[in-house]
Amino acid sequence: MSNEIQPHNAKPASIWNSGGGRYNEVSRGIADSIEHCVLRLDPQPGERILDLATGTGWTSRVVARRGARVTGVDIGPDLLAFAAEQARAENLAIDYRLGDAESLPFADGAFDAVISTCGVMFASRPEAAAAELARVCRTGGRIALTTWLADSNLFKMFMVMKPYMPPPPSPAPPSPFEWGRTERITDLLGRDFDLAFEKGVSFYREPSAEAAWETFSTGYGPTKALAASLDADRRADLRRDFIAFHAQFPTPLGICVPREYWVTRGIRR
Image 1 (cartoon, helix red, strand yellow):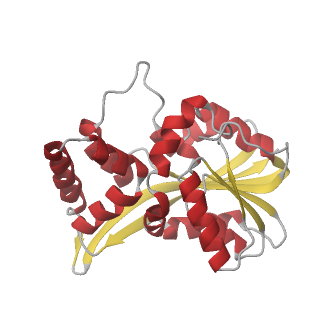
Image 2: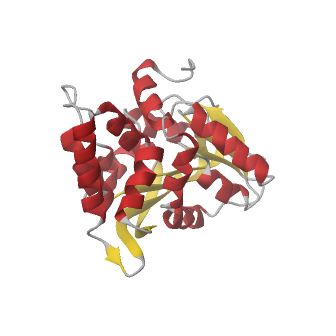
C-alpha cells in the first residue's frame, strides 16, 4: 500500500480495492443518485472539482462531461486503474490520484467544489474526513454529497451481512450510516459550510435477486471480502440471506430496490 494511505486505513483500502473494475457495476446501480448529486453541485466548465472516493470513476466522468477539470481520489489502486482506463476510452481528461480522505494530498482551497457520492461516509475517521473536505474547498466553493439514510434499504442490506462479520473492535468504529442523519452531517460540516438537504430515492434494478448477489459478491468490496472470508457453508448461508433480502422487491421484469439517501449541498464559509 502506498504511503499516501494512513496505516489504520490499509485494511479498509484492501477491502474496497478488492472489487476492482467490477465495482463499476455497483456504481451503475446508483447512477440515478449520482446524477441527482451532480445536478445539485451544478459544475461549471473550467471549474476545479474533486471527486472524493471516486471508486471506478463514475461520478468523475459525469462531472467531466460538463467541462469541469476533475480530480478523482480513492484508496483503491485497482479501482483507480479502471477509472483511468474508462476516462481514456471516453477522451475525458481526469486526473486520478491515490489518496486518503482523512489526509488529502492537496493544498488548502485547491478546489472550487468537492463531490462525494456514497463515498466519504465510509471514511473510518469522519471528523478527519470532514475537516479535509472543508480544507480543500475554497471560500465560497461548494460541496455535494450523497449519503444513505440511516434506516435505508442499503443499511438493511448491511444488516443482512452483519451476522457473518467478525465482531467489531472495542470501542467499535462509528457507523457510516451516521452520515444518514442530517443532525450528524451538521455536526461534521455545519461549522464550515452553509448546508441544505434534499432527500432522494435510488432504484437498484437487476434481472433477479441472484443477479444482485453476483454484482455485490464480485464487485462490492465489503460483500466480496466478507464472502471470501467464510467457509463454504457460511458463504452459502450468506448468499441465501442476501438473495432473500433482494427478492422482497419483485417487479414483473426483475427486482427494484428503493434506497433512500440525502443529498447535502454546502457553501464554504
